[in-house]
Length: 399
Ligand SMILES: *Cc1c(COP(=O)(O)O)cnc(C)c1O
Image (tube, rainbow, N blue to C red; front, top):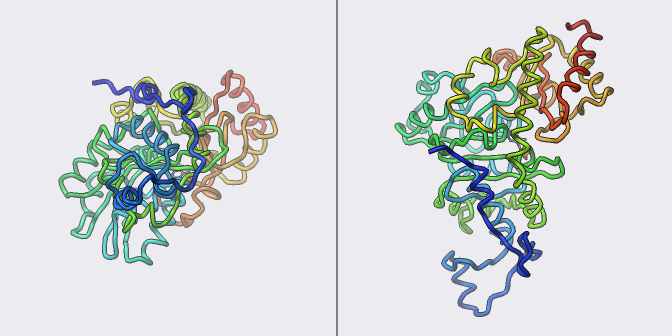
């Protein structure tokens, strides 16, 4: 069956209490009970449809959670105040002292720092692996291994994780496969291919307006309930709760996600092809020159394209910086971290978003200092944008 995640989001109906076409926002931290008995029942998790306290759950957050679960095709979801809140809660819910994690070596800088520097203090060890090598993954599995962690399209190298094959390894060894799908919402549905848990930083494409920080974990009901457990749930106890006002705002933006993703993908493909044609080294899963082009093509929901992220390598950090300043000066985009905005954003990951990774390790994984990461925007006229970029490249004698 062809997966239509955007239809599933749009088929949901949430009305306001006066028939409003948007659900009412729950502007309360606590909720009253008609009887004392139903309060204690709710505390024990036995009362469906009752709310207790908004750190645990709120009506506004539940609407957004339903939309996220519909998008990823999972039973349930839990929203968080940030992507890192979602990632750290999820990992600490699954792993305890003595446990072992296998993680892709090219993951988001914050995730890398958490696994490399923070979780070892709690007795949780991580081995980092080239996620495109299934043999290397298998070799690292030991009795204490609990999860395999990766991103579909890794940050910033755009290495592609073959979810179907990795999930087979995970299932065979009784491991949970945790996938960060922040770079490729709608384009890829990892749960369909066997991922147990799908995480997003909603901050990026899904919200799409660069006005908030937010995150979500999508999974089966049991795991989502375990995160919310008042006695030992990592979400409930560490408290990375999203505010209801913000949940309502993210939900409204999510309804146009399919249109935006198609445009981001279309523009990114145009830029990637243009760079390549002009002899600039570009990495984009939509290019046939990408080593995992076939893997991505097989995995993707075709109509949404290959996503909005492109990288180029201009050799040195000095040239990269000059190019980015020139492009910003010409109003072709902004020199900024993050992604998924209507405007193109660019940064040099080696010295910014991936600076948590040591220079030596950056070199080992092929993260050159002259790498520029583009989050391609919703430009109405992308050929005009490329012509502007081309002028900058010429001024620096790069073409
Ligand atoms: C931004 C990002 C995160 C972290 O999300 P926040 O919302 O900033 O906490 C995690 N993973 C990826 C791939 C990201 O791009």
